[in-house]
Image (cartoon, rainbow, N blue to C red; front, side, top):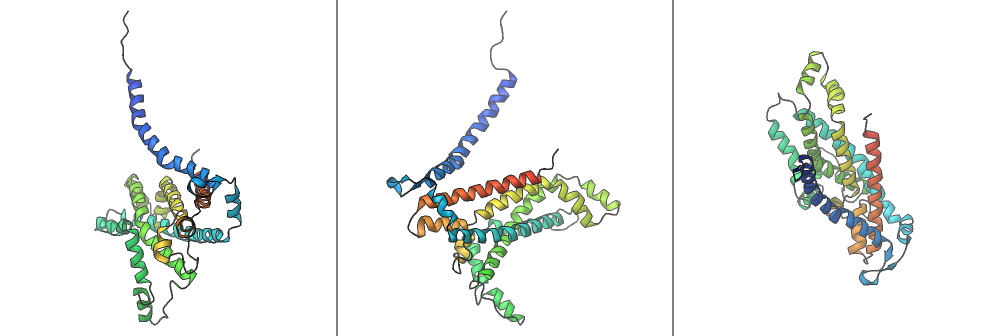
Length: 294
């Protein structure tokens, strides 16, 4: 009896799946996991280039005594604790408002709110530097209402406030798009039924929108925390880490350690590994806390 030769339909589907997965997996390993591994190996050495020598965990011991690193970590966590909740809450509220089918010009408003995240990082940093300069637009407005001008870049607290405002302005629209996409999958009849039952707008937002958007909110929270812990452009282009090191972030410190000061790539690699561990731990905690599945 002759058996039919060739692959079964199930095996063909399996091979097709692997055909698409393997290239993506290879690129992720090549451009993500391999550099992480190399950074960790580099952090266990000292020296530059061909003069590398084994140093064990001395770089990590040095981090524990590095006051500048802890200052930059404190600065970064200030941005994280203040900016991320404000940005995500504002994005959620805006998405909820712009998801209203009866609102006119919804497309225009969505585009206007999203546009800041399409702006060049350097360009928008220059705009904010100009706006918050001593004779800039913000201080001019303060003088116009009888208030004293603020030296925004002469005070650590004020300079951090400028960075937080800039981050909220730039990234709120980006997260709003994710929430809008999630809201499109929520049956609008749920809101209509709640309205008929006498539920207020806030009640519908709290009991319908937020619970059904929990996976999207968790995803944007993880992405925002990861991005904030790696914050670099605003620290460099907006305040240059000043005054002093009051606004310098951990990524900015890595850059200075590698290229501005006497190059110490091994120590910079150790700091980058510490940041990676922070991101991994915080993401794991968020996933455990945010995952409400049985």
